[in-house]
Image: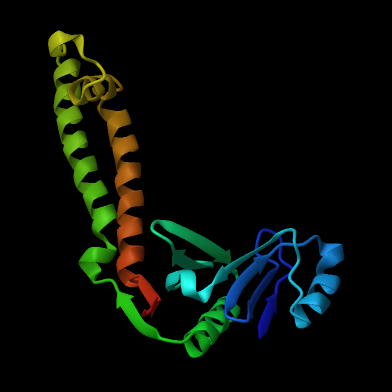
Length: 203
């Protein structure tokens, strides 16, 4: 038996491992002491408590820096246990690793390309739309007129035409800001690639 408690608002108040069942509970603050006393006697509250038997669990994952431990069970079902403190979250995961039978441990560290894939794609999309809309915006400022075939202003071309009407200076401000955000995200993600720890329950 092992019980962890937390008093921070917005995070799970009680996580427990009792008789091969993982519990998560969020009793009212005034009820916590009573709940903890009952848990020590393996008396499980009927309200504000959920339990997942080990036999149902397929995998337990923890992403470094993310305040959750995710438990996957059933076909497409999952529960997230919210634990803000890094040390406490690691402690809970390590306890599961040591005490869940037939659990194999593995880690998945993202490569630089995989870590920065989404912001890199965003930068490419931003660059394409900026180039396209800037070309049209320059043409508009020179007196050229543009329209969209079939008046389809909900199409990509229609959206670009609307954006181009803002003018070259505004385009530089808007797309420059978006590109800077995407670039910052790319640098941040590649500096600290995602690391996911996994416990797979073998049947």
